[in-house]
Length: 242
Image 1 (tube, rainbow, N blue to C red):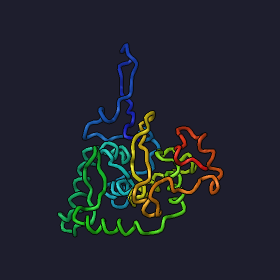
Image 2 (cartoon, one colour; image 1 turned 180 degrees about the horizontal axis):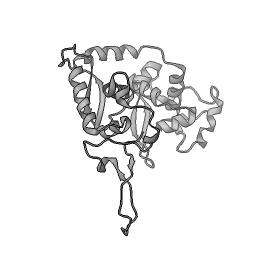
Image 3 (cartoon, rainbow, N blue to C red; image 1 turned 90 degrees about the horizontal axis):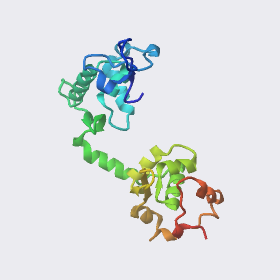
Image 4 (spheres, one colour; image 1 turned 45 degrees about the vertical axis):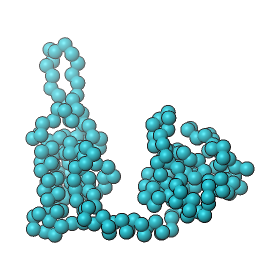
């Protein structure tokens, strides 16, 4: 579901201009339902779901990895935007314990142009300890492979890493970034995509003083020599296989 959904608008058949569809971001009033383009195939009514619209809203927020505008949430649920905004306010109050329940360890709030679930600030110390301890956990095979691509091909974008590995690496890259092994180092001059590289902590964990100490690539991963054929890759001179 995209943030914008075309709505069919009525036009005067005698008008001299062609009818156009208006974006729900501008044409939908607060009290009118935001009807998705595939509304005829909508398989549910949010009010009939267990827990009603509030529970449906929670389900969406729990899987969102970025702030979601209220109008997009309304479109996903086929509900009026003002009803969705009211529900968001009620959920926020409930999570704070303002409705007779216990305060939760998370909250829903508006930030960055949309709504998202965050851990509550009161628990920052607990969350911080958990994240730091997680850095000592063993990396999965997928994380190790992704880290290898970044180490040998930096600076590199997520898309380029995905092209090499043949799978989506967004989740793995977030893990590596959270653990301090990978960080943003710039932007691709042609696409504007964020580029990533390894960190000083990566060198520390590997026991290296510089990237020059990385072992030659070809003897271990001979197929990686074809990486130069992937769009956007330029082999770093100081990391070329010997």
